[in-house]
Amino acid sequence: MNPSLCIPHEHALSRRQWLGHAGALGAGAMGALTHPAMAEKLKEKEKQVLFVWLDGGMSQLESWDPKPNTTFGGPFRSIPTKVPGIHVSELLQGSAKLMDKLVIVRSLSTQDNSHSAGVDRIQRGDPKNRGVTYPFFGSAVAKLLGPCSSKMPPYVWVKPMSSGFIAKDAGFLGPKYGAIAFGDGKPPENLLRPKSLAPDEDLLRGELLAKLEERYRKNRFKENSEASSAVFDMAAQLQKRIDLFDPATLPKRDVERYGTFDFGRHMLLSRRMLEAGVRFVKVTSYGWDTHGDNFNGHLSLVPKFDKAFSAMIEDLSERGMLDNVLVIVMAEFGRTPRINGHLGRDHWPEAWSLAMAGSGLKKGIVSGKTNALGTEVANDPHDIGHLFHTWFRALGINPKETEYDNQGQPLPIAHEDCKALEDVLA
Image (cartoon, rainbow, N blue to C red; front, side, top):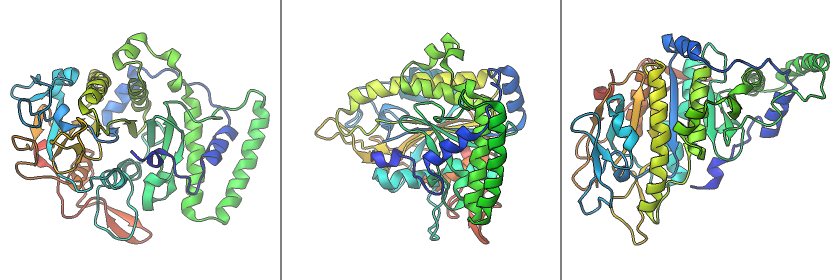
């Protein structure tokens, strides 16, 4: 993975500016730890998304579409799942027990076999080229559904490395719909009011800031001024829920179930963000680009993913939230059936898999299949545009009837030549 793709792009608002804005706001009272009452409220009506991005490309052959005892199958067995007739890799022990809640799509056939092209294309849905930069899926959902009633930020990204406000994801929608990244699962620096700043002084600063904001709007593009106001509002809400980032408030059992490794910690924070009312939560795991030593790599990576992912599905189900939270697990492509000279698998967009669960979907099914060796989709291959249609439909948005308005230019929210996978929709 090109490291530059992981670094926030500083467009209208720099990371330093965003953090400065956040620090200038008054500290809200610490919110109470999320409890079942919040989950009960969320499950009533509000749709949310958990988007798990396995950056670099998980091997479908070591996960959702194993081909044991074949030329390219590798050393791992397949195991039966809770749904008779459906098998997954033996590395997915926890997911196998939850297959009755999952959907596996084995018919993905996309185009780009490079990270630099694939990451953006997959997360934007590859609409027809109209000379504009389309938003990532998280920004699209933030725009089309808006914040939840909690008023928490609509789009957050839990990831390794740096924090900040990432405007790049929003494309032509404008920086207001960018992502707030929590680097290493931590809140942005300087989020809270310094102890040396008295509340009355902070109030005066807030009044001055409001006047400066009004002045700023007069000399800036609407999109930039809206983004500036939005980050102040989002920072204010995060200040009220700073407890979400405090590991001391986590039950020991949850920490053990999700795992103390980075991805486990980040998934547990993502669950808390969903419970707190964030509309779209993206969580990223890096290190899946296994051109060399693929099997030892996946022997380390997949069980960690499986531990945290299965804990998440269990918790969302037990809290009654899974019916309203759309869960998606994917990457920019899969990995080659053919094993290279370094015992690795290379990039393979031609035939790969993803997993889903939750809102608007059936349960316990597999859609599509690959041939015996896993080299190509056996019938009816699907590009990413088909998945965007499917996801929007699962969230109650009809992509055939909904358009973006790009300064008077109507634009489709999903590729017009694609359609939803009807067999996975509830």
